[in-house]
Length: 499
Image (cartoon, rainbow, N blue to C red; front, side, top):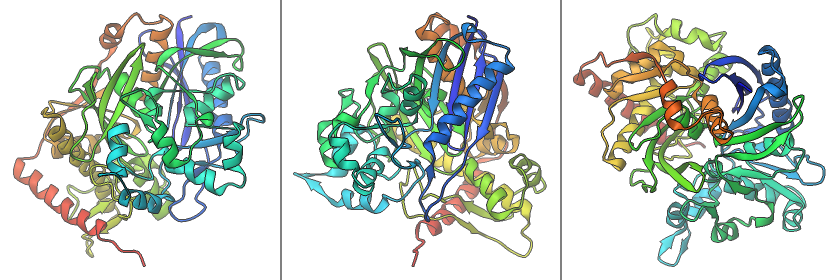
């Protein structure tokens, strides 16, 4: 068995990749699925559609690699995090659409929660100490609470043990194992705002606070072990690795030593710094999260979460129609040498770290008669990089570690213009690896370690190779001017008041 199958269930598509022992992609398949927007600020997915597309691309990737089940040593799963699914344990059917991590319907509930106190402390501080997270609609707890409060009969059925909750990893494992396994791993559990990262278990105080019965929660397991097997891909294959997409990317980039940092450019943008075996609680509005749990050892990371990154390019394509394909953005933006004074703040779903402003809105400013489609395209790409720069500043303050290089991955890191500008505004080298699908590679690595396909992390580190190194090309004065312009635009975005 010379291959690992990685399932990468993302926000806009389901993907599957087959890796060989050298960590190379042998075959892949991908299928997009519907994005559902019932109301402004609401984002939903059809969980059944996610399951169908993920199973389909898994089989297709194996077929393209000309592999049977006997040729696959294990399956690793990585997933969009925080997205919340509730389903009937008997029928296996969701009781409503999945509420996506981008969804903002519970923003007001989060604001009310922030104002409440328990003893001398605010609930926000209690939650931060236990979970490492800020109170925000981004996380699963208030989404699950909303489902229990708004889907008829859901609360009663949950208390009776008839309903199951899970993030997307749990939903996929449940379906691949025919309902035999209701599990999650520690990295995904740490994104729910219900999991105590210090005890490594669901927290009873938080379950009471959000009205969530423990009976509906999955069992929390390590990120690398054999959980069960599936027989839905032509034979028995063990499922042996699970990690949330960003933690999987950290592992795939072999950022396994304290101070190593990766940034993933996908629908959103996520920077993680490995901080070792003890959690560092942020003083600069970053998240403290579980990186992974292997065996009995939990490792942690600091994270800066940016809600809109590649999604702003999709918006230029689908919303404004100034490009026909996302791949056109680099060529269009390259038609101009700078942004021409145009700044685009991509706060289409509020702002994540380090601001956590649920009510900020997207803004384009600096337009003149001379502004063109190319300036807007360039401003969109620069808006991604500016957000990353803000997160890095906060991360260095929290950790006391000065970044030496940034490892990058995700689809948008193939954009050379974006990567060069990222290096320019950060003032450090940006390193793109040979395999930019680090998320899927991380899931494959965790699964491979569990079944002995790879011996240890050292063997994985030896396989990591850089593809291209981007170094800063602008001077500090220019960098400061660009960041100052961004700060002015950002302030306008945060002061937006909707009538």
